[in-house]
Length: 187
Image (tube, rainbow, N blue to C red; front, side):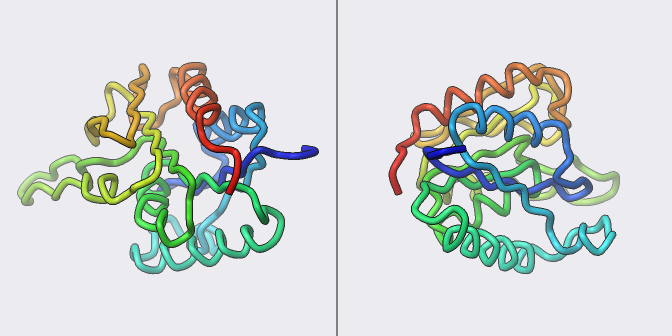
């Protein structure tokens, strides 16, 4: 791409890698909107493990990778960070630290499904609410993790899908393209 208007850096979910269909569709939509793309595989996946590292380790790796990219190939571009599920949580928790111009959340896991005999897990809404830059959440209408509410800087687009976001890829691509078109193009 001759002169990209920004960069989108995406991370994967807890149990999958960067080949997830929704990540590919979001990356394609962003590329069509004039953005450079970087897909980041967390070290636990590179090592062949399926269980994610603790949040502080995921966040530290993410910050290091985004800073490296921002000082190199993506220098001077506005950075949009994001990911699917767990990767979206990482992007939210680190948005301020990496100077993100926006955050893209695919299938944000708002509330983990209840497990028999256990206390309900707390909502992860505070992670979304801590983000101060424009945020897009693309969420399946049948996502068992729930539907985050829209807010002042947060757009929530509901698509016909579950947590995998596999069934309405056109709506996902449209939501990403439309949202990216309205982000500032200077860092």
